[in-house]
Each structure stands twice: as C-alpha cells, then as structure tokens.
Image 1: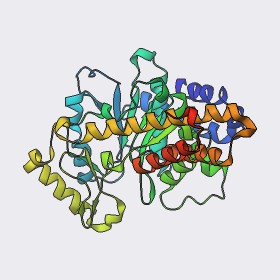
Image 2: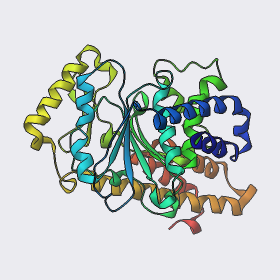
Image 3: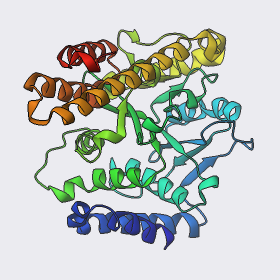
Image 4: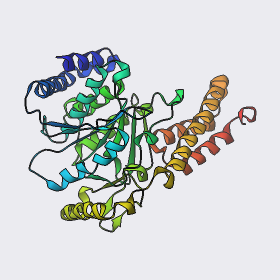
Length: 363
C-alpha cells in the first residue's frame, strides 16, 4: 500500500494541471500497487537484484536498472552479466526486472517508477540518488569508468537537473540514461506511461517508449529538468559497418537496426571481451572522458551565466529590449535545452547573444 499512497500523494500534491489526468495516473498507480504487492509478498518475485556487498563509494549513490524477461536468451543474460565487475568495482546494485508487469514497452517505465518511489519512501540519507537505466542490448566494455563522472556538478544551478540522456540522428536514445530519484521523475514516468490514455489518438510509432518519453520531456514543465550529453559517452552503437566507439568507452549498444545480425554481433563482442578485455578496458584517466565532461559542464555554466545577464538586462529594458535581443535569448535557451551536447552550437548562440547585449553588460 505504501507504493500506491506515495505515488498518488506525489502526483496530486503537485501542480493542478496534472490533476486532469487523474484517471490515467490512478490506473498507473494501481499497476504499481499490484507490482509492489507482487514483489514483496510473492516467493518468486520476477525480480533480481545484484548486490555488491561493498560500501557505496564516495560521491552520489547510484544504482543500475534493466529488464530481461520472456523466452530464455543467453546472449542478453551474458550482456547483463557483463556489468558484474563494473558493479563490484564501484559498489553499484543492479536491479533487473525478470517478469513483465504490464504491456510491453511500458514495463521499463513501470519498473523505474517503482524503484524511484521505493527510494523516495526511505530517509533521505539512505536513498539512492541516481538510477542508470541500461537496456539488455548494452554490453559493459570498460568497468573502470565510474558513473558519477557523468552526473551534474554539485552546483546550485544544476540541482534542477533530473534527467541525463543523449540523442542520435533518429532522436532521443532511451537505451541508456540517468534519472535522479525525485518527485520530478515520478511525474515524468507517470506522464510518459499515461500518454496513450491521455491522448488515445496519438501515434507513437514502433518505438513507443522512446516517443512517449521524448514527448513528455519536450513539455514546458519538464524541459528545464533534462540535459542531453554527447552520445559518445554512453550510447555508442555497433552497426553493420563496425563499432562507432573506441577503446575505453563505457558501453557498446546493439540496436534493432542490426536485425538478424544482432545476436552474432553481441556474441562476438562477449567473446572478444572474455579473451582480450585489456584491449577495451582503460582507467578513466587514460580516456578523454574527464576532459570532455569538464568542458561540457563549463560550456553550460558559461552559457547560463551569459543568459542570466541578458535576461536581467532585458527585464531592465522592458519594452526597450530589441527583438534581436529577445530572439537571441530564446535561441540560446533552446540550444541549452535540446542540444547541450553541441558545443559549437552553444558557442555560436552565446556569441550571437553577446552581440545583441548592451556593451555595459558584456564582460
């Protein structure tokens, strides 16, 4: 009953515009209640939790989550097993859903929602702070990379960031992403699951989980809480032409576009890692992660500083602010919200905004 009451409390104590979706959110809360009861009161829960037995390392408390159910698939089992050493080195627990609890794609968000709410029900000092979701078609190739390096710096200006993901040419990639344990994440997941009920006419296409989450993240209420990082950090794929990434990368992803060759590709990679792990495993200091990540947050921090100065000046000018200044402010906001990974675009947007700011406000 705790899960049900916690979900409903978090939803209905929030903004009034969520209350109009009570039917959909109540249905999802009931699913979560049944899932919770199934988990805690059944001898065979359909869940597996890989516990490291180690103390959580210094820094944010992080867990991983994935799902694998249905017909036995040894390749996927071995892919999830590839995380074992990484989890042991860094002290991560890994939660794996082993039995479907709702329809197809929505199991991912139902499971994540249950994990987030369970953590929120704990005292703050005992909670996991972030959950990294990884689909079962990801293979962990470099266990030396700590997940904490991808998370926002402990600056006040980044406390509102609750989702870290990446995009490809096809849009949002939901094969691997980070979600902060927070009421914001509860609302995000509930709305993503409820979208087909909120709007039965919406066409989410084949990748419904991806399209639904993207649609909600694009909403005004959620856009400020999400940031998109370079896909090269944790969403590089094996394609028909070869691996997009390089030695030292965290993960290799095997997308559906591989079709019938996916299983052979994954099996070949697993064999390669078993025989030549040293070829792919590197200490984080021997990779480009640290410098790239420092530069990423520095660009965003600088861009937001310029944006703050410009907005302050525009407020002072009120009706005297030029259309060019207003448009440049809007454009930089848009780039940060949707393409924070594109440093060239951020730099160009900052320069454009500076050019339209009164000289007294420009450093």
